[in-house]
Image (cartoon, rainbow over all chains, first blue to last red; front, side):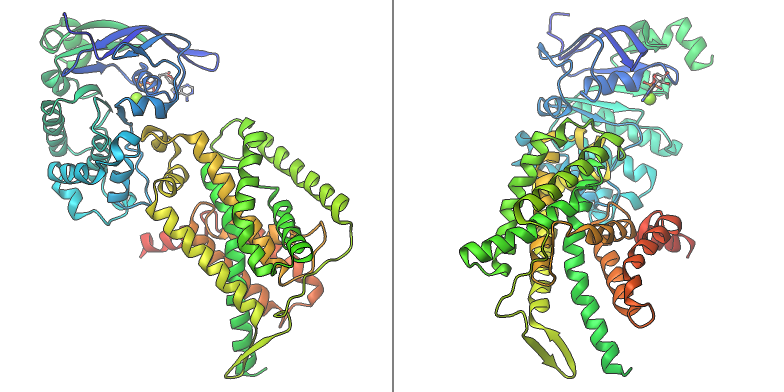
Length: 239
Length: 297
Ligand SMILES: Nc1ncnc2c1ncn2[C@@H]1O[C@H](COP(=O)(O)OP(=O)(O)O)[C@@H](O)[C@H]1O
Ligand SMILES: [Mg+2]
């Protein structure tokens, strides 16, 4: 591939205190791609995303965005560069309205001036949120909260959007809708790093993927290659 | 005991609730953003009272005017305290021993400074308004209490507008409700903590200066008010800014009406008993209780 990757993670190691959980993983995400990280519970997917976002500092290794080293930078500096995470479990502000949650998604200085235009775009993508704009976020259903969390992530016009298990706890019908929204967002030139457990579904929309197990990359390939790999079929697709 | 007397007590309680809210809100914003209990709260309130005294004695500035001037002065004092000490305490999701020890130590230091500078004598500030009263249909209200209430109310309205309509205000509420989500939205937590500490101390200094219009004070001033602030904050659910106002009204009503049944010498125990009761039966504060009722209903 000749295009310089947008995100490069190189030999990343992360520890919680003395307990190391990421043992040198490497992967790249090129502009416009949907890349997925797949792995069982406890593999280290959330830890990886949290480290990229600057919530955790790596023990070793590099995280480069557009060639700039971001490892160990505080979260607000990472966000300023357009690297946005939609965290596991939504993490909305429960006692704020839907609209307040969305507006705060444009907190980064580069996004503030555009906040109201961007709000209209998010409402166009999720008409349901517009009807609920004055409702307290904490009183919505899981699916509605997930839409709000995604909307909040889009408010700063991200360059790289990282999803941590967005389908967790959603009814099957909503899962289909969610994946449709994610591909829709990708078509608008947002690069996507998707962590998911719905493996079959994810590999259908992903350009490339990496399989993570106990803090190591065990396999990588295009979505198609992974879908057809015997190992993935046996361990993740149950066929 | 006629209806008039009850009405008088009720009005007195509401007026008290205003200053109690202003006094407690500083503690609440600091707890919300930093999850630290400001044990130096009383010390800054005491400094607020002496600030009004100095302004009155040296510059002949009315103590009510001084209380407003205290806002920017104590904001800067709070920011300086954060930059020089508080920011070195590791961030946590609940109060930690280092933060409690630091702020408790700071309170002791401030008291000692108070004794060193102003001595142990009881001080009070008299102004033209101190003795004036205002009467309306059998209700008698000291004018000074009315004005103090008005300033307290204005400060709360300003805070409300600020928290809801500025980027910094929204970031304060965001970090209070979910810190990590705030970081992921790009909020600089260190800067926000510093400004929030300034904001909290600004309200604490304002409250101290306002209280100096109503009560006499020594360098010990503030400790009984700090206990009340704890109660009000706990009743309010620790992190809810509107809950604080509800908590303040409850504490003010109970204190005011308890005069009818509890001997004056036991007055101090009332806040303490309320605190224990609130901690035991209302872990989520009044709002938590209302939410539970709504869910049941
Ligand atoms: N805050 C934490 N402190 C200590 N260990 C943690 C913490 N969070 C996660 N871990 C451990 O790190 C490993 C990876 O967890 P995580 O990144 O959440 O995995 P995944 O998202 O793939 O399920 C697990 O063994 C988990 O127990
Ligand atoms: Mg996870």
